Image 1 (cartoon, helix red, strand yellow):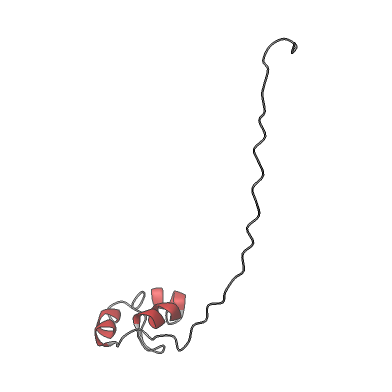
Image 2 (tube, rainbow, N blue to C red):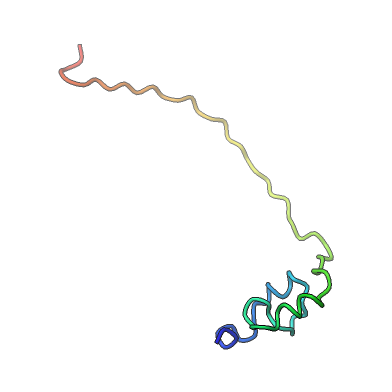
Length: 76
């Protein structure tokens, strides 16, 4: 079944729904997830900001080059 395939569930699903990490996974443990979700607390909040600033360099754009195409005979 589904439980055998995932070996206990998706840790991310448990974390973001506020379920204990050793509890049932609401996505794959049939019949147990709804009860666990109704008794779960709020999803955990990070203790600090893990984002990092990224420096971007914007290069100046070059002017477009006009290309013309002559069809037919030789150009005059």
